[in-house]
Image 1 (cartoon, rainbow, N blue to C red):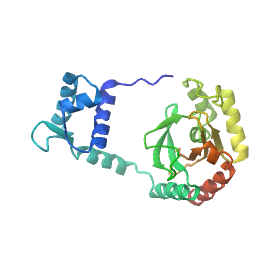
Image 2 (image 1 turned 30 degrees about the vertical axis):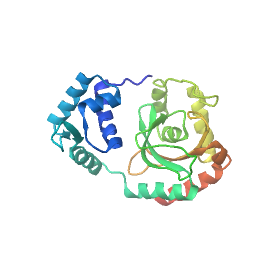
Image 3 (image 1 turned 45 degrees about the vertical axis):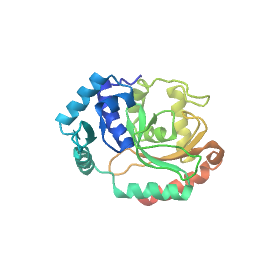
Image 4 (image 1 turned 90 degrees about the vertical axis):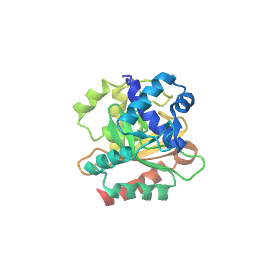
Length: 244
């Protein structure tokens, strides 16, 4: 099922990402030119955000910059339902021991979304950041989430999935996914090989912490990680068993 993007919402978030990269004030004309947006709609969007207190003019010359209201809201949200601090320590420890990018994933519709990420220090690595999504059926991180769902819930989710082929190894049917889940249960971990992103291999485990459905995944280049999957799984299992 295709994800519908509400353009106004996407543009608002892109404004925040724009300033996060720019790191200095910008006029509406500069924002419009840099993002390739019509100037009239850009002026209206920035004006709305300024009126609501999300942008201000630190130089007083029509150059906008995000206010601390964004940070205050983010902190309030995080404090209301925080990830346990041991989750952050887990990701740091696993990434340090394996040398590869490590992430915590949570369900997001038909996707698995990264909520914590620690990138590898290798020059050639899996580049990932918080908020990135991968198909829940075509990733080891996603299947480690599916494994925590009742069969009826999985079947309902399968009906929403657009079984597109991303590579020769992408699972293309509910039956194939269920078979993969059974194999993972017998093996003791979930694994992937270029199912969604070319040349990447992953290993994941369910991470049911605090009543949440989470998974932890280690991902890296096939050339470095494919044959190491049992070793990586052992590292993951050792750390996860200490936590749950």
